[in-house]
Length: 315
Image (cartoon, rainbow, N blue to C red; front, side, top):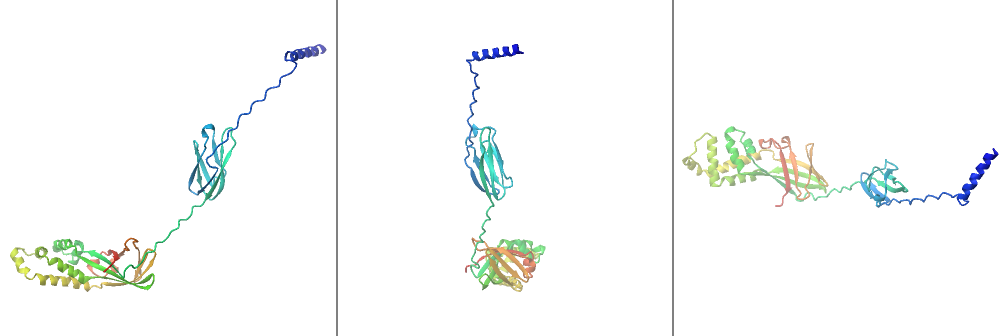
């Protein structure tokens, strides 16, 4: 044992001598420089449902970049290369943590607010602009055919009358009981329609065409000599027809009494328990009233009801 220990001591002394008598200490490893994560924003504020983007400005210097939201009930986030997209979920505050290899984590403070309710301003219109509003109903061939009792022999005559583009004027006369309500009378001008009919047929060529079609409808042969016999009675015949049409319309109950009220641009018209809410056009003050046949005078002319667009009437 003594020999072994002596040999070990000898070897150790030789090693120390070879190294200059000192055992070298290992050199310390140099610390790597830590990289900082640089962001374009560290505090953002958005509404729920909105998105905001934050840029990692030194993204190319980083590796293994990750993002995470502390409270995913308030916001969500995603990353695409250097762009972090943060989406607001619900009102509150949270943080988005950004991490990368060899870098200290940085955070983005996120404030999410509820979207503001839009302020709806109901536009105010001046109503009524005038005491009277007017709608012109142009009589087409379908209406004329109804006026002629839908007789098949009078189809051509209905087309002829429809081509004349004669019309009936409907009027609504408004009166106020309060600033935003009152009474209104709906009527139509039967006598004015009769005058238009007379004026149209007074033209010689129009009257000749009318006689030809009427005679064919009645099953009579038309020729110039027959027309000459009728032509001298032209004025009396036109007056009689005009009066007949006017009386037929006038004999209908052609006036309706209603009440009205306005709220912003909504006009409500009521009669006999029925009400109609219509919108007033802010540009020209017009409104469209749709009436069913049972709400109108009992006349074949109105058997399909009417869609009437009334406009301010300036006399």
